Image (cartoon, rainbow, N blue to C red):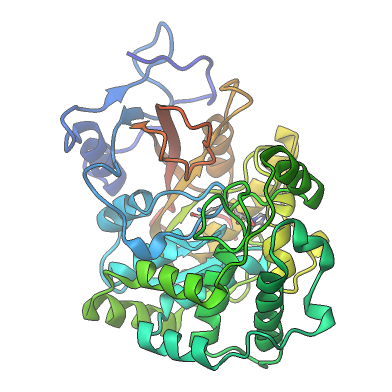
Length: 430
Ligand SMILES: C[S@@+](CC[C@H](N)C(=O)[O-])C[C@H]1O[C@@H](n2cnc3c(N)ncnc32)[C@H](O)[C@@H]1O
């Protein structure tokens, strides 16, 4: 039986067994869909932890494939099975599901596919650029037609950057410049152009001919120009020409291959009412108080992922000054605490009474800091009922690298999710 290393909460939270919280705990305790029941962690020498900490394989890619529409890479994205688990159990069709740190929009797309309303926020404009087009997907025919209409040679000097020849053949860079120009000259890109921009953003650099660049690191982690030059020298490679529109069309077909008429209907219905904010999620006046049924989210962890640096090439392509995007990157737990307390206060405002939060946190500093130990007291201080901590354990193979694990070895993947609920009664705090 796993033990937790130290007491992270000064008292035990008790919930009535016949309350929604109690029933959810029981569901998770008894969960055995993949052959084993949940293991419960205890404090050394005690009978139970401050909140139940339940470990199991709750969702898995082996038995349950995610929808191909999710398959755009993003640093530290979660798998669609994670939000699906909570959306299916804690919301009904039509309810609003929100992700304040939306990234590539996994929670929103999954909510829409499950016939829920969706809202999201990310401080980086890349969040909306990657998410909105997949909530309103055009047809392959419309994409193909538009790709045929773009003048792929019409780059202007401001749309080219010579140093990028480290990544791209001159003809490829010209085509990318022409696409930048095409997108720049639209006052508001229509859904087809927005789709093309989203796919191109995802094909900028990578390790196969399915990307515009010569061999490079995976697409969610662009290396610097100097580093790319070194990779080229070491591998004795020069960027080959790539067919930019053909790559965009091929990836579009992959993303859209299983989008059914019903998926399309649900996605478009969610898109029509969706709020996608580009701002810091601790202050979101656009999201109505008491409107959200469920938040499923994963905040930036302590010093783990450098979103600013990893996204520099995507920012260039989209005319975003990466240095001006004030992405939260904290190295000290205290800074993280302060920011997350503000986020919890805001989440409490936007949630309906009785609404839920599934807050995914990483194990950082080689397991010496379990962020949920910080999250549970912070959430209680903001007026939430801490319900339980779920630890999802999944064996992964070398192809599973969506979690920021890309060491090409097998191993165990762990996600830790603090589940919280806003009390049903009158709000005590603002
Ligand atoms: C762990 S990622 C979320 C990934 C997401 N769950 C997905 O599946 O793509 C954290 C995100 O938080 C965003 N972020 C950082 N600071 C933020 C802030 N103050 N407000 C909103 N988003 C922020 C980052 O840009 C990044 O996209």
